[in-house]
Image (tube, rainbow over all chains, first blue to last red; front, side, top):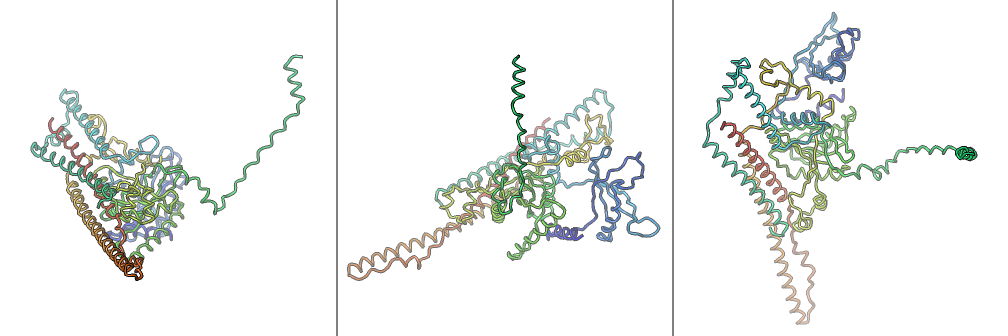
Length: 230
Length: 378
């Protein structure tokens, strides 16, 4: 328990003192314990749904930590057992039983959803790419290659939509009015900026030229120092 | 007698070779601790690659976003194995803005030791192999980074690496992690703390040869890979016509197109930074020039004084008196040392980094604009 307190303090310190909102403990997580098949019955009460005999005790401990809010228990299934998919489940506890003993509580499942910030999305993409590569490693991509991938996927999405529209026109597929309206609204709003495009193109070219110039100058300045000038 | 049977009898007459005595099983003795640094096999293998675990990636990203204004930094823990530095965990270091250097460094050390101790209790890795730094718009050349890296490089077995995470590029859709080490030539100069122009010339050091990049890889362990593929796999629960559109497109992690954003806001800020760093560099150049002028002036004074002394001595000798000593001039005329060029070197590095980011952004913007035009023309 000493470990738990010291780690929490250090974690909060490490996050930065300028953080306005205080980080609080909201619950605890545990792994392991597959959901046993229904055919095996409930004889083995242990490790049912990722919960164990000690879950109630630990839950009680964390209830005191997170008071007055209920403690959340997140059970993570790694999916290593057969027949069980990997997944995350969340529970809150409520006391059950005649006497309010600490070890008696029933775990009530609550909906659990995975959320990530937009800015973290890129990191997630990186992890996904390394997850799908054969030996589990991947090098970080350059912006150009990620642009390339995004353009490719856009192009394939567009060809899918095109195939669908052509099929509808040919009469082979039943038209779906909601889908048709959605496509119309999305693809019909292309802004008309001929002149604007040319000027922004010129701006971008100028910025690129300027950046190259600055880099060349910096290099020259560095070499000048080497040549003995000031 | 046929030959085979003769051979058989001959073989039977030879004494049976005693079974070769089993070679004595090598006894393994633990290397006495005093010798362990001498017989350090791993240290011989140079570092060729850095491998980050997926956990480290997510932790660094999260910390960089929570910390205000690109000030996130922390330590990397892991193990170096056969030329690959495997980083398996990391933790963040608190960011102190107080002005008392002594207190700050002591509290940092205490934080670090208690963190390492706690990690050891739960059998996590506790071997420091480097540190990470978040930056924005690609510019990370500053004094503290160089200092920390130099300290690490001296103390750690393979020399620590710095992993730099670029916030702005991640926000724009490509996670960017790069690993660097200090070049040996820079380490030499740093140890001697002599950054005058002459020593730079001697080593041919420019800002681009301060840090050398080490190739970086991201690794996900198989459990994580299966979990992620499970999340990203499309699930056919969309009400919309997954059959019509050819392939379903709903998953817990839908594809993101943030990299196609045409926005130009980043360019303006980048330009500002470039202009600011140019100004800083010019100020620093002015300081260096001022210092060199001072030195030149002092040298000139010394020369004139010496010339006068010699003239006086010549006069005195011609008059038959003792010549005045000439050695004490060096004590009265102190020539200030050559100015340190480190700051201007770092500033040049910053400038170059900003310009490079600007250039790549502009180039990408060009490609995106042509793509948008192609989409618009049809």
